[in-house]
View 1 (tube, rainbow, N blue to C red):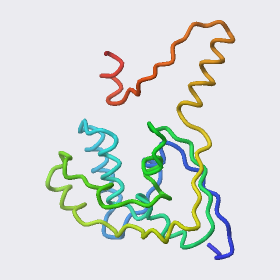
View 2 (view 1 turned 90 degrees about the horizontal axis):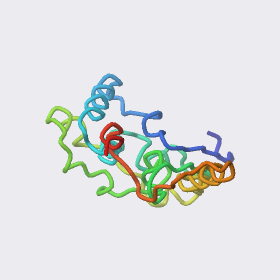
View 3 (view 1 turned 30 degrees about the vertical axis):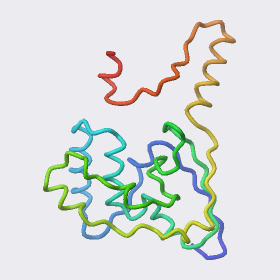
View 4 (view 1 turned 120 degrees about the horizontal axis):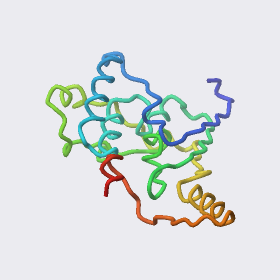
Length: 174
Protein backbone atom coordinates (compact mmCIF):
# COMPACT_ATOMS: atom_id res chain seq x y z
CA UNK A 1 0.00 0.00 0.00
CA UNK A 2 1.61 3.30 -1.04
CA UNK A 3 2.33 5.55 1.98
CA UNK A 4 0.42 8.51 0.50
CA UNK A 5 -2.75 6.41 0.11
CA UNK A 6 -5.91 6.71 2.14
CA UNK A 7 -7.73 3.51 2.97
CA UNK A 8 -11.45 3.02 3.31
CA UNK A 9 -12.37 -0.19 5.13
CA UNK A 10 -15.91 -1.57 5.21
CA UNK A 11 -16.33 -3.88 8.20
CA UNK A 12 -19.53 -5.63 9.16
CA UNK A 13 -20.75 -8.34 11.45
CA UNK A 14 -19.51 -11.73 10.33
CA UNK A 15 -16.06 -10.43 9.46
CA UNK A 16 -14.49 -12.59 12.19
CA UNK A 17 -15.50 -15.72 10.33
CA UNK A 18 -14.69 -14.42 6.85
CA UNK A 19 -11.26 -12.79 6.98
CA UNK A 20 -8.00 -14.13 8.33
CA UNK A 21 -4.24 -13.97 8.07
CA UNK A 22 -2.33 -16.59 10.03
CA UNK A 23 1.32 -16.91 10.87
CA UNK A 24 3.22 -19.36 8.67
CA UNK A 25 3.43 -21.98 11.43
CA UNK A 26 -0.37 -22.40 11.58
CA UNK A 27 -1.99 -24.25 8.72
CA UNK A 28 -5.47 -23.53 7.37
CA UNK A 29 -6.51 -27.09 8.22
CA UNK A 30 -5.60 -26.47 11.87
CA UNK A 31 -7.75 -23.33 11.89
CA UNK A 32 -10.58 -25.25 10.25
CA UNK A 33 -10.38 -28.03 12.86
CA UNK A 34 -10.28 -25.49 15.67
CA UNK A 35 -13.28 -23.56 14.29
CA UNK A 36 -15.21 -26.79 13.80
CA UNK A 37 -14.58 -27.73 17.43
CA UNK A 38 -15.47 -24.25 18.71
CA UNK A 39 -18.74 -23.98 16.79
CA UNK A 40 -19.88 -27.34 18.21
CA UNK A 41 -18.51 -26.76 21.70
CA UNK A 42 -21.31 -24.61 23.05
CA UNK A 43 -18.85 -21.85 23.90
CA UNK A 44 -20.33 -18.36 23.60
CA UNK A 45 -19.40 -16.38 20.48
CA UNK A 46 -17.33 -14.05 22.67
CA UNK A 47 -15.01 -16.94 23.60
CA UNK A 48 -14.88 -18.24 20.02
CA UNK A 49 -13.83 -14.80 18.81
CA UNK A 50 -11.20 -14.47 21.56
CA UNK A 51 -9.64 -17.70 20.27
CA UNK A 52 -9.75 -16.37 16.69
CA UNK A 53 -8.13 -13.13 17.87
CA UNK A 54 -5.29 -14.99 19.59
CA UNK A 55 -4.25 -16.79 16.41
CA UNK A 56 -4.67 -13.95 13.95
CA UNK A 57 -2.13 -11.56 12.50
CA UNK A 58 -4.90 -9.01 11.76
CA UNK A 59 -7.61 -9.42 14.41
CA UNK A 60 -7.44 -7.78 17.86
CA UNK A 61 -6.19 -4.59 16.22
CA UNK A 62 -3.19 -6.19 14.54
CA UNK A 63 -4.40 -4.96 11.14
CA UNK A 64 -2.89 -1.64 12.28
CA UNK A 65 0.55 -3.27 11.97
CA UNK A 66 -0.11 -3.88 8.28
CA UNK A 67 -1.77 -0.51 7.63
CA UNK A 68 1.34 1.04 9.17
CA UNK A 69 0.50 4.77 9.59
CA UNK A 70 -1.63 5.06 6.44
CA UNK A 71 -4.63 7.32 6.96
CA UNK A 72 -7.56 4.92 7.33
CA UNK A 73 -11.29 5.28 7.80
CA UNK A 74 -13.17 2.19 8.89
CA UNK A 75 -16.94 2.26 8.35
CA UNK A 76 -18.58 -0.35 10.54
CA UNK A 77 -21.95 -2.06 10.53
CA UNK A 78 -22.40 -3.41 14.03
CA UNK A 79 -24.17 -6.62 14.92
CA UNK A 80 -23.04 -6.66 18.54
CA UNK A 81 -24.63 -5.37 21.75
CA UNK A 82 -23.41 -1.91 22.78
CA UNK A 83 -21.56 -1.52 19.43
CA UNK A 84 -18.26 -2.50 21.07
CA UNK A 85 -15.54 -1.70 18.51
CA UNK A 86 -13.32 -4.46 19.94
CA UNK A 87 -15.99 -6.99 19.05
CA UNK A 88 -17.22 -5.85 15.61
CA UNK A 89 -15.22 -7.89 13.10
CA UNK A 90 -12.92 -8.99 15.95
CA UNK A 91 -11.70 -5.43 16.39
CA UNK A 92 -9.48 -5.23 13.32
CA UNK A 93 -8.77 -1.51 13.73
CA UNK A 94 -9.01 -1.04 17.51
CA UNK A 95 -6.33 -1.34 20.19
CA UNK A 96 -6.55 -4.42 22.41
CA UNK A 97 -4.90 -5.51 25.64
CA UNK A 98 -3.91 -9.04 26.68
CA UNK A 99 -7.07 -9.44 28.78
CA UNK A 100 -9.15 -8.90 25.62
CA UNK A 101 -7.82 -12.18 24.24
CA UNK A 102 -7.66 -14.14 27.51
CA UNK A 103 -9.15 -17.60 26.99
CA UNK A 104 -8.32 -19.14 30.37
CA UNK A 105 -12.03 -19.73 31.06
CA UNK A 106 -12.61 -21.65 27.83
CA UNK A 107 -13.07 -25.41 27.61
CA UNK A 108 -10.52 -25.96 24.85
CA UNK A 109 -8.81 -29.36 24.74
CA UNK A 110 -5.08 -29.32 25.54
CA UNK A 111 -4.20 -30.00 21.88
CA UNK A 112 -5.76 -26.67 20.87
CA UNK A 113 -4.52 -24.80 23.95
CA UNK A 114 -0.95 -25.68 23.00
CA UNK A 115 -1.47 -24.18 19.53
CA UNK A 116 -2.73 -20.86 20.86
CA UNK A 117 -0.77 -20.46 24.09
CA UNK A 118 1.60 -18.09 22.34
CA UNK A 119 0.14 -15.36 20.18
CA UNK A 120 1.41 -12.63 17.87
CA UNK A 121 2.18 -9.36 19.66
CA UNK A 122 -0.64 -6.87 19.84
CA UNK A 123 -0.25 -3.53 18.06
CA UNK A 124 0.93 -0.65 20.23
CA UNK A 125 -1.34 2.36 20.77
CA UNK A 126 0.67 4.56 18.35
CA UNK A 127 -0.37 2.25 15.50
CA UNK A 128 -3.93 3.61 15.71
CA UNK A 129 -3.23 7.35 15.47
CA UNK A 130 -4.25 7.53 11.78
CA UNK A 131 -7.24 5.18 12.04
CA UNK A 132 -10.78 6.52 12.37
CA UNK A 133 -13.65 4.16 13.20
CA UNK A 134 -17.25 5.15 12.45
CA UNK A 135 -20.35 3.05 13.08
CA UNK A 136 -22.70 3.73 10.19
CA UNK A 137 -25.42 1.20 11.07
CA UNK A 138 -26.28 -1.10 13.93
CA UNK A 139 -28.88 -3.54 15.19
CA UNK A 140 -31.04 -0.85 16.82
CA UNK A 141 -31.15 1.20 13.60
CA UNK A 142 -32.27 -1.88 11.65
CA UNK A 143 -34.92 -2.75 14.25
CA UNK A 144 -36.25 0.81 14.23
CA UNK A 145 -36.62 0.81 10.44
CA UNK A 146 -38.36 -2.57 10.43
CA UNK A 147 -40.66 -1.63 13.32
CA UNK A 148 -41.66 1.64 11.64
CA UNK A 149 -42.28 -0.07 8.31
CA UNK A 150 -44.48 -2.74 9.91
CA UNK A 151 -46.44 -0.14 11.87
CA UNK A 152 -46.96 1.94 8.69
CA UNK A 153 -48.37 -1.19 7.07
CA UNK A 154 -50.57 -1.69 10.14
CA UNK A 155 -48.89 -4.98 10.93
CA UNK A 156 -48.69 -5.53 14.69
CA UNK A 157 -45.14 -5.99 15.93
CA UNK A 158 -43.08 -6.02 19.10
CA UNK A 159 -39.49 -4.81 19.36
CA UNK A 160 -37.82 -7.11 21.90
CA UNK A 161 -35.56 -4.84 23.99
CA UNK A 162 -33.53 -7.69 25.48
CA UNK A 163 -30.51 -9.01 23.59
CA UNK A 164 -31.01 -12.69 22.86
CA UNK A 165 -27.84 -14.67 22.35
CA UNK A 166 -26.73 -18.26 22.35
CA UNK A 167 -27.56 -21.36 20.38
CA UNK A 168 -30.37 -20.50 17.93
CA UNK A 169 -32.33 -23.70 18.53
CA UNK A 170 -32.23 -23.23 22.31
CA UNK A 171 -33.14 -19.52 22.11
CA UNK A 172 -36.06 -20.19 19.76
CA UNK A 173 -37.55 -22.79 22.08
CA UNK A 174 -37.54 -20.56 25.18
